[in-house]
Image 1 (cartoon, one colour):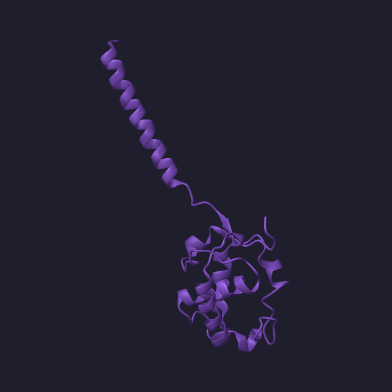
Image 2: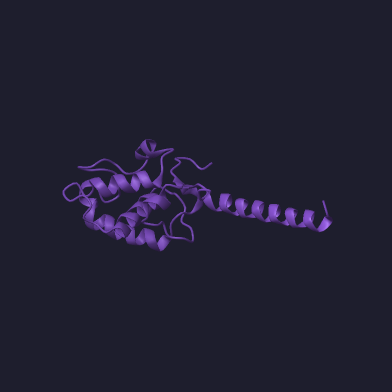
Length: 146
C-alpha cells in the first residue's frame, strides 16, 4: 500500500476514534458530590430560613427540634445518610407542608433543603442548590464528612 493511502486511512481512523471518545466523555454522568462540598450558598439558606419560618416552623419547631412534626436535626439525618438530595427534595415537596403538599414553588423547596443543610452544619459554597430533580441526583447526603 502506498504511504499516502496509509496516511489517509490512519487519519480517518484517528478522527473516528476522537469522535467516539468525545461522544463517550460527553455521555458520562456528571460527577457525584456530597453535601460536604458546599452545594448551596449562604444567601440561598437565608431564603430557606424564611420559607421554613412561614411554612414549617409551626410543626417542626422554631429550631427544627420537633414539636408536632419530627426533629429535622441530629437523628433525622440517619434516615438520609447515603441517599441523594433529590430524594430529600422530592419527599419534602410531595409531603410538606402537611396540610398543603406541593404548594410551594420548586425554588422555595430547594431553598428549604439548603436551610436544613445549613442548620445541620453542612458547609455553604459558591453555587446555589438547583431546584432540578435530575441535578439533585448527583448530590449525596452523608452524615459525616468523608
